[in-house]
Image 1 (tube, protein in one colour):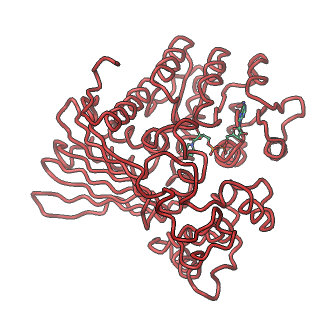
Image 2: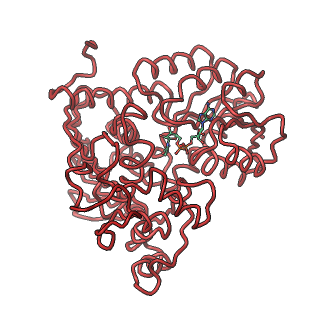
Image 3: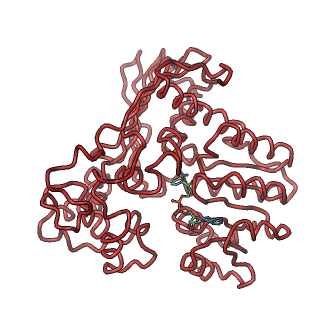
Length: 451
Ligand SMILES: NC(=O)c1ccc[n+]([C@@H]2O[C@H](COP(=O)([O-])OP(=O)(O)OC[C@H]3O[C@@H](n4cnc5c(N)ncnc54)[C@H](O)[C@@H]3O)[C@@H](O)[C@H]2O)c1
């Protein structure tokens, strides 16, 4: 049994990692938590039956105490990772740290060094590594099935509604409060590209801009908020009640699901008979109000950030970005990230001397196909419908982290981890270099001295 403390009981801490722990009481137990929001703190404490003396209103208070458990999960917002992670490692906790590690390379480096010095695990939540989909790609490349890898093309097609939720109206809309988009959203993708290329990155070239979600693109007469009598609410894809009351755009993404019931649900979500009657309370509706009732959510849309017109927010992160990435071993990769997609899905293509891999990894399922050059055969390596939870990555990460802590606790050596703080540092460095390239309009070498 591994015991854990949680710092930050928000969408990730409470609703993802907390839920996994609650579903695995034979392996894990949450014994203390820190969360400033009383509603979230008490709800999470009640779910895990945490004693009143172990419910803290800040990570600082919790980490002031002698070590209370084997592991510490740090799931605070992007700019609040470094201090609790360092304090937890100094206390001897094994640490599971949300991505991105930190907003600066120096802080990332500091954390990786601290883990090494304290002899503890610092596992960054690069959930994609633990998905059946990306694991199958890695296995296929390692088996030599496509020969020598030459190129990787990866695109992250963020659904137009998800992008508006997180990067226009929501928590990651301003770089100074969170991070540049390439770090906030795509440190996962840089981690995956480096893992699949199996080589350190040499140089990166990037461009991108915030060209669409801007005030001058607002339709004539659009007010500040959707519910303030917008004349375009009938035909605007971002109209707030569609997503936050009824979940319509998210449900529509299931139209291509391999699960017939989900395809039906997607059809129902667009049918005029049912549309507007669904009471959607899951993410992202769960984020806008601690009270899940439709009345409370409507009030949140009238007064809070998520009811704003997408063209009238205070966002500054880019809404499109591309990257060209060269690796030391000669692999060339391209990456495209944008917030205009009909589907919430990554698409990938890996071409090698003996074959090619083509894949789609999305909200409504994943598909991976191998094309063999010599035989001309085409084989489906994977077709799955993993609902939510990052295509099985959230659960895979928790399983791997808790197994590793359990092994350490029992004096066994943990299974070879899929990643380490050093590896995460290396992929975060690609993001910092890419942002530098975008801002300075030039190719950036990973080994160049910082200005
Ligand atoms: N691994 C992934 O795929 C993935 C996906 C989404 C988000 N994230 C990352 O997870 C992190 C958390 O995201 P979220 O959506 O859960 O955010 P959130 O805002 O829902 O949760 C953060 C919580 O931390 C709490 N908090 C603030 N200050 C605190 C303090 N001093 N001590 C303790 N708690 C404090 C907040 O009240 C909030 O409840 C972010 O860094 C985000 O980028 C990772």
